[in-house]
Image 1 (tube, one colour):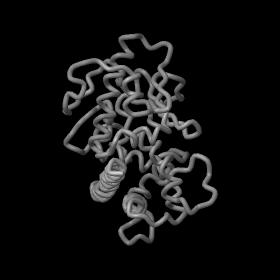
Image 2: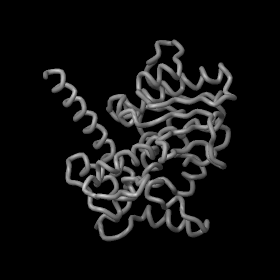
Image 3: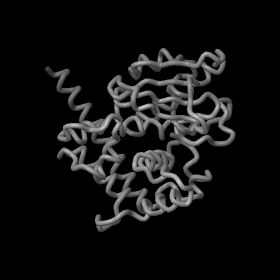
Length: 273
C-alpha cells in the first residue's frame, strides 16, 4: 500500500524523458488491456471522459517504461494475464494506491495515485512469484509474498531464484548474513516508535526498494515512480542507504533482465518448432 501523498492530482505535470511510444496519439484502456493482457481493466464511474483519456495515456507510457527498464515482455507486466488493473475504483483510507492479493488487482486512486504504480506493481509480482520461488513448499499461505517467505523458507534452486535470493539477502541481512541489515533495524525502530508494524514488513521494504531503484535510473517517469528522494518517507530513511540499495538494485535488475532473456529464448524456440 502506498501512503497518500500531497499534490498528486491527475492533471499535474508528470515528468517523463522516455520516447514518444504513442506517436503523439491518444490511447484507450482497451488498448492497454489488449497489449498487456490484463485479465480485467475497470474504471470508476465518476471518472470524466477527459480524465479517462489523460489516465490512459499516462498508464500506457508508464507500463511501456516499466517493461523497457526491466527488459521484460508485456506478459510479465500482467503476470501472464493474472493481474487486473483498477483506476478510481474503491480505494483504501489514507492510501493513494494498493494491491489486492485475493483478486490480484492493482488499484490506483484518481487524483492521488500518480507515482505509486511501480510500488504496487512490485507487490503484485512479489505475490505472483512466490509459488515459483518456493515451489517445494506444499502449502503456502494465501497471498504469501516471496519477500516475506524468503525469511522463513528455503527457495527452490534455480538461477533466477538465486538472483532474487541475492536481492533479498542484501536487503534484510547484514554483510555477514548472520543478522538483520542496518536498514531492517532502522525500519523496525521506526515502527516501534509509531506503535505499529508497517515499514518493517518485508514486502513493504522490498516494494520501496524496488521503486527507489527505478527512480535512480537515468530514465524518468514520475507517473510510474516518484517520491523516493525528497518525500517525508525518504527523509525518514525508509528507503535503503546507498550501499544496500546498490546491491539490491544490481541483483533485482539482473533478475528481471535474465527473466526477459529467458522468456525471449523460449519464444524463439517455439517459433523454430
